[in-house]
Length: 230
Length: 230
DNA sequence: CCAGGAATAATGTGCATACATAATAGCGGG
DNA sequence: CCCGCTATTATGTATGCACATTATTCCTGG
Image (cartoon, rainbow over all chains, first blue to last red):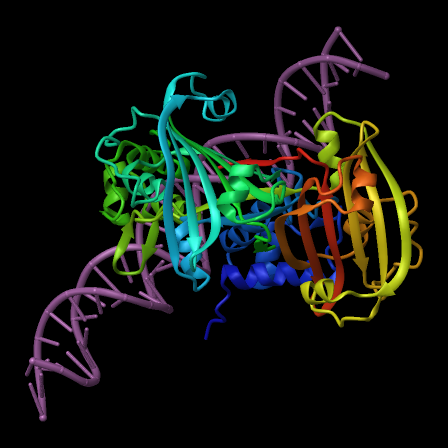
C-alpha cells in the first residue's frame, strides 16, 4: 500500500528541482519538516538525502538558517587511487614490473617535508618501472622509512613496493598532489619518450600515526589521462 | 546524562583499531549488532559510522557476509573544484582576467565527444587568461553551446566565462580529467613560459540534462600543484 | 553427488521520537 | 542606540523498532 519513499528518491527529487531551476542559487529551500510532509516521508529520510547533497557541495546547510543553494557551488571531484597493477589490469593490459635501482640514501628535503620526517635521515630509495603490455606505463620513485616494521624480509626485485606496502603496513594517512613535470634524461630513457616530455606526476606521502612511512613520485608516460565523473 | 556515544566516536574507534592492526586486511570485523553492544550504542549509530568508512574505501561491506578490511584498499582522493578567481583569492593573491580571443567556430571532435555534442556544430570559442598578482596563472580554452539560455546578454570581456556559467546555468553533470601537456607557442606566450614547458591540464565538460553546455581546458602555469589530504 | 530451493545471517533502510546544538531574532536594560 | 541575554528555529544526532534486501549456508529430493 505504502509508496516506497526512499532517501534516494528524495535526493533525486531534490536534484530534479535544482536542475529544473525551481531551487535557484542563493535561495533558501523548504526545511526538512516541510519537505517530509510534502513528500510523505519521515524527516530523517529527508535529512539523509539533503545531508549527502550538502556533502557533495550541491547544497549548504546551517543550523537555524536552513538549507540553501550555494551561489558558487564548490564541486568535488573524487578519484579512486588503486594499486598500479590493478589499474593496468582494469584497462585490459598485462602488467609488468622492473626494479631499476635500490639503495639507502639520505632523504632529500622535499620528501622529508612531505611526510614530515627528518631531512638527511637514511631512507631506502627505490626506482622502478611499471609496464603495461611490455610498454612503459609509469615510473615510480620511492623513499621508504627503513624502520617500517617487517621491511627486512621484503624483496623489491619482484614485488612492487606499492603492493608490498599495501599488504604489509597498517592504515595510514597522508597527502596526494598532482603536477606536470618535464622528463629528466633518466626518466625519458625509462619511459621511452623524448627528454623534457610533459609527464603527469602524482606525489603521495603517507604516515602511520606519528611515523613517516613512504613518499613516492609516480611519473606517468606521456599521454596518460586521469578521469572521473562529477 | 550518560556518555554520549556519537557516530563520530564509533568511527574514530574503528579507525583506531585499523591503525593499531587489531583489524587486519582480509579479516572480518564484528557485526554491527555486536559492536553496538560492545560500545554501548544503537546499531544504527554503528551503521552510520561503518557506512561512511566503507564509502571512503576503508572497509568493504556485504549483506550477509559482514564487514571486512579490504586486502587492496582503494583509497579515494577528493578535490574541491572552485571558481578560479576564488582559488586565487584563497592563496592570498589578487585575481585578474583577460579575454584573448572570442569567435564562433565549428566544434572540434575532441570537445564534441567530451560533452556528447555534434562535431562541427557552431560553438562559441573563448580563449582567456587568469592572472594572480598580475602574473599568468592559468589559460582557459573554452567552447560554449550558443543555445545556452541567457547567453546573449553575457559580456566575456570583463567577466570570466567560468563565473558566468556558474551563476547563470543550472546544476549540471559532466566529467573532469587531468593530464600533462606541452605548452604550444601561443600558450607559452600567454603563460610567459618556455615553449613545450609541461603544463598541468584540467579538462572539464558539462551538460545540463540532455543539452551540452560547455567544454573547457585549463592550462596551469608551470609549477602549479593541485593538492589534497587523504 | 548434485541441483535447487528454503532458512539464515548479515547489512540496508524507513519511521517516530526525543533531545542536542548552533545561529538567528527579538527583547530588555542601561 | 547599543549591548547582551533569551527565546526560537532549523539542522544534527541517538534510539528502538520493523521490515527489506542479499548472499550465503544448508538441507532436501532426485
